[in-house]
Image (cartoon, rainbow, N blue to C red):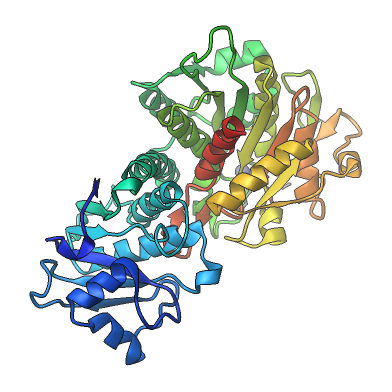
Length: 505
Ligand code: BES
Ligand code: MN
Ligand code: ZN
């Protein structure tokens, strides 16, 4: 879909539909909505006076101008209470409006930037949120379906701004929003893609496509190279699969800015289990299909590196995606096996279903070679985290570094991608001690969340580290305005904002 920024008045747009907005409880519309109301002879005011539109968040109403203005339809979207207004509500309202426009069959529509006028938000971030909400709300995954007869699709959105002084900020915001939304869509596509397509090999191919035309270099380690490096934990998981595992490295190097100045380095690590059957500790059949989303952390890292490169951020960002299936053939690893990770630590396998921490262990050890200022890993790691925080509510945040945790929480607040801190007590590590090896990979039924993070901590040595358990957020079965059900792309916007804030600070 094309997005164009235009310096004109919204009521003068000759298009299928124009979008204006209203805060809850407003009786006399002002700004652009007021201008449209006047052009329609007070039709918006009538709608409010008649009690037919209250301005509640996500409420919509359609008016037909019948020639009073060039547009064929006017769509009013509610923004909720003015005192509760946030950037996230701009994303929501934008998504609601765009989806309504699509349902109405509009191919082209024009909109004002919600929140930049009366809402009092900064024009650039409001425009970014408008672009993000629109594109993310219109996202669909229908690659494997016959096209429907009634294919409604929006081809173009015009962002209309009357105040010339705001145009540069709006253009910059739309540009950023477009790059970020494209990255989220890439991540969603990878996660939605069925596991017979989205193999480790496909992830590696996608990584090469991402690198093309960007300041990103890609290296993919094969089974043999992993063996030479001593990645025995990752290889143990991979040995039960006929699909070759891939250790994917995306390395974004920013343009040099100042002579001799080296940019900070951040390593992002993402769990890339392309299907988690549980292995010999096999999962119940019901709901197993959702385990195609067990590479959501890896896909989010790939999306984030793409967006960070597109935004030209002056930080070296390395994305590491250990990728393999967790399935069973005659070579599959077994409970009671003992494996050796890249840092030499041995691990007793209690459950082959606790595979995520094994592949992350080797990736976290590998991360150290970049001498990074921070390492953040994202993983659909535990069902226990879903139980603790609630599906669709928040991702769990664990960190060995308070400052890093603060920075992530800040990025979470501005993106609306919620994360919630959970403890990393020393005592959790006792739970993961084995009688026969240095560690075991599961602490049992009642040691779900903290113990998984404590296990990772034994491998995340030598740098500030944070772990995000995104199991509650990666894949949802309910529609939200800008997150249609299925893959959410959770983490991409958060990581991009985190890196953006690093250099703004
Ligand atoms: N991929 C799962 C975690 C998961 C479960 C993500 C449900 C999303 C939805 C992970 O590999 C796993 O199986 N974890 C086990 C760990 C246990 C065996 C220690 C779990 O949470 O039950
Ligand atoms: Mn598992
Ligand atoms: Zn898993």
